[in-house]
Amino acid sequence: MLEAKAATRGPRTKMVDGFTEENWEEEMQNHPFFNQGWKEGKELSPLMQGLQDLKYSPDENTKEELAKSYKEDGNFNFKCKKYRFAIASYTEGLKAMSEDKEMKTQLLTNRAAAQFHIENYRSSLLDCEAALVVTPMHMKAVVRGAQCCYKLKHYADCVTWCDRGLEVDTTQAELIKMRADSVQMEKAKQRDDRKKMAAEKREKQEHSALLDIIRQRGIKVQSRGSSLALSDLEPCHPAAMQKMVRLEEGVLVWPVLFLYPEVGETDFIEEFRETDQFADHLDAMFGTQERAPWDQQGRYMPEAIVIYYEDSAANLVSVPPHCTLAQAIYNTGFMLKAGTPGFILMVRDSKAHKDFLTKYDLVK
Image (cartoon, rainbow, N blue to C red):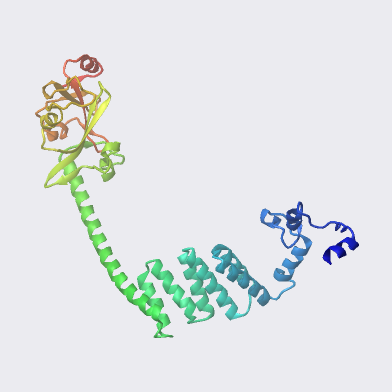
């Protein structure tokens, strides 16, 4: 039956300008309802522009209608978790300047919720405060405001917001719990603040005592300012970072740098007490059978090492191995630079040693 009807109907004529399998995607893209060119900044089609004007034009809509349209757009974006788009829509709704207090309150509280979801807690709190100006004791705004304060760790303010809401509804479970948590957190915060202040005061006293000791020892320090400051004692050498000189039971403990110009190497000693002799550290470093990678020949032996420093007049000063650090740098021509005493170590009477001495005036 169907075949007979098809045969009598004859060949189907082709629809003029119709969709085909080859062009349907292009045709759909050109259709006003489906065209996405606006995302790239292209002008809307006359049809779509007309629809936009009908919905958003202030000439075609009252303030209340505009505010409602933008609120609906915002709610749609909010449900899609596009919170920044929702914020933009609610903001446009507020710009419509509707006289409807309920609408203005909804726009503010909805925008506060969107701001909260992207962790803009301060902006969210400001919207809650604005909503309460329009509609005092609006519970949604009060709860959101309390949540913002809690997130911002403003626990005392959170308690105030909770009390404000509990005046209206004493059974509001979220506010009751948030208030109790905030009271405990505020106590803990105050306790931590007191500990922090005490620690800062103690640290300040220790730093002041350290600077006094440095002055009393007669140490010359290269200072950035007119007077000695703690920053002048902060090491700048990478190995010495966070290893500033400290006072330990009345004894200064220094970070010390040993330089070996002959081989282009350095050693960093984290704790060199001012009462330590250089010989003690040389024995510990070079008095064993285990050699440094750069001294496999064993040339750097404690008894063969000579020690120098460059004084403030750029002269080379010899330091006896049995000299203490205090004897070397206190009340002498030593100049402390970057908080780290530095000393030059060489092998006695080596060619490098002899060549090095020709560059300086030696002070023994």
